[in-house]
Image 1 (spheres, rainbow, N blue to C red):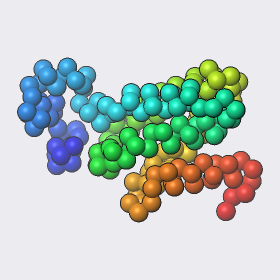
Image 2 (cartoon, helix red, strand yellow):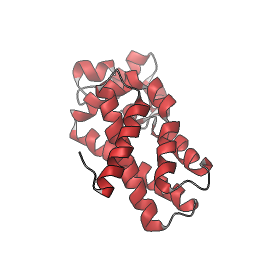
Image 3 (cartoon, rainbow, N blue to C red):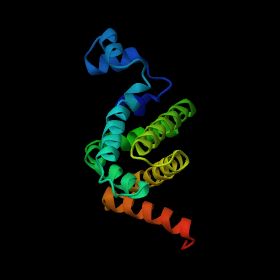
Image 4 (cartoon, rainbow, N blue to C red):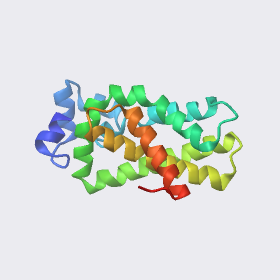
Length: 173
């Protein structure tokens, strides 16, 4: 992260990252297929937490409440990784290829959430729509949280999910 911040993502090589980490380039590539993955390494863990939480939610919960609880379940991971998330956001914002990668990862997560909802019996079109809306609400909450060091992520998440609900029923403020 320091190298990306200092030199820029495009000017930083995998060899420089390996050297800074005190490992060989070969070791670096055993852990990461390319330098982009340094920024996206936690995606599998986040996906596992979210899909497990969807599967483990009480059967009586609807899709929206299930997704809310799933994103709440990821809060400890996100709080732990906040020092990494703030510079990561800047680095991704400065690089169109990284923005594209971020979008692809978000789409992949959305597909996995929709699949998990389907496994709970949510009809296909509703599972896809709920996953898209839930992922969007989560993204909004996460960005607001990074901008607001005073509030808890859970507060931003609850607000984003309420905002979507209010938009749907026509109570925008």
